[in-house]
Length: 112
Length: 113
Image: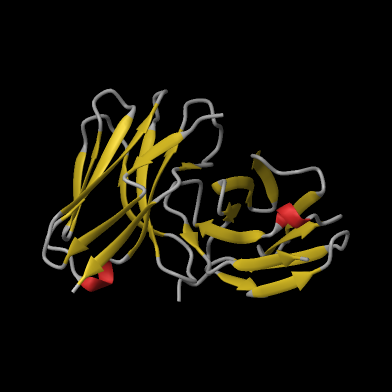
C-alpha cells in the first residue's frame, strides 16, 4: 500500500457521461499530480496541485478539470466522455514540490 | 512535445542474468528518474538522478545520468523473478515548469526461472 488512495478502482461508463475520480494523498503530502496512462500514449502528465492551488497543467483536455480541496484530497472530473478517454488514471502525491512522487494504484476507466 | 525513447521495448532473460536498458532524448533533460510498474499498480520510484554524469545504485539496480544530459541507463544485476514488470524512465525537460515529468513508453521485463 503506497498510502495514496484512489477511488473507484474500476469505472465503466457510456460515451457522453461525466465521472469523478477521487484521490487521497499520503498523510502530510501537499502536492497532488494526475497522470493518464493509455496503451498508445504511455503516461501523460495532466495537472498538478500544491496545497490547494493549481501549479502546472499538461496535456489536459478542456473537458477535464480538477481541484484540490482544503483537506488536500483531489478530484479529477471528466465530462462528455469519449471512447478514447478509456485509460488508467493515476494520482501521485509528494510532501513538497519534488520529483519523488508516490503513485496510487490508479482508476481504470472504460468508456463504452 | 518532448519525447523519451526507451529500448528495448521488451526483453526476456534467464534468472540470474544482468539486464541493461536505456532511455534517450533528442533534447536535454534536467532530471532523470527510473520507475517500475507491476500489473495493477502504479509506478514505484526506483532511482532519481539530478546531475549529469551521476551514477547511483539502489541494491541490485544502478542508473546513470548521461554526460550529454540526453540519455540515461538502468542496469539490474543478478535478476530474480520479482524483477518482472515494466520499467519506465522519466525526466523533466527544461522549461517544463513545476515538477511534471515526461515518461518513456517503458521496457517490459520478463524473467525466466
